[in-house]
Image (cartoon, rainbow, N blue to C red; front, side, top):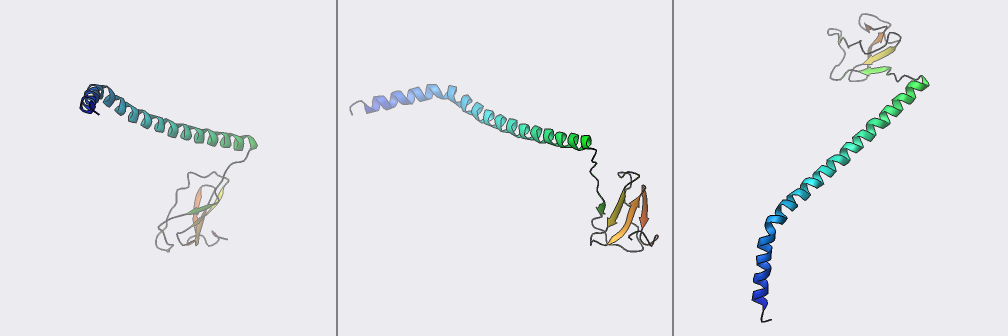
Length: 126
């Protein structure tokens, strides 16, 4: 008990001498933790991409092409005064795609890369 002040002063001196070495080390530890987190996220993304590639290759080998036979146009309610004219370039010539407005009503079809609107072609949604 008689040497408490001297011991505390000695430990404070050691702490003052050690702070310049420990402070950069603490900053490096946080940077290292962030880099490890980023590496883990990148690895997860790479694994996801690899799984998608495997699935795509399996579908290609099986001869199955994923197709969409329905197209819903958002923020459009069918009226005879305004033709929505959807983009037909993303579909194959042999595909038949029915087009619906935002309420779920059939407004036409895309067949052989041509847009058939129900108000101009009466049999478009049959």
